[in-house]
Length: 297
Image (cartoon, rainbow, N blue to C red; front, side, top):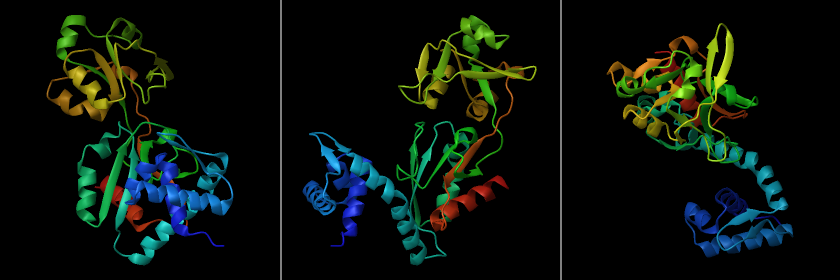
């Protein structure tokens, strides 16, 4: 007996959402329909694919194997359907996972110009610093620092080289002075960043006489939100550390001051990355071409 392909799409939604109700909302069906569909699929394969609890759903080993086996074929089917629908007019939902420090993309103009140029493309941006498999999570592409992108991905530069910066508000410096060397950071109030709750805070990286080193500052405030880091620094709470372009407008207005400039050197910047596929979806091709034109301006 041939399996109903709709059940595979239903299973994929359940696997990604880890919740029957969330999967039902995503598919626009009832929770009962999801439960019955999963039961039919499990009956077809002859084994349990999920373990249900009152609040969530976990994949069994068989379910994990099926999810892995389906991820690329389902993506290829979606791409093929888009290409058949209209090769010359990119359309559809484009899902992106973007790191919170990718200011060039998140600042607005690049994305605004893209949606203006392609009105039939709907963009869904998830800002996340979690290191996750974009294919497994259902994203079309991601934007991250080039140094942390997997080797089997295709990467397209979004901007030029980046340079980290240490800044503080004039009010903080008037009260506490400025560090002359990165080792002096241990004597200052610092505002640090961590990408996830269960991950160690980011170490502040410097270079001196061609030798790279880092400093594990004792941050009084730690967050995964770049905006909170910026706002608390502007309020005089301490020194903070992030890509230079994040602070440039505020330095230009005299609200923040550059510090330790001699110890900060350029490094490869942010890239749009996506899995290698034989047939790239027109919506993703449109974004790649748009970014390349944006950089060439």
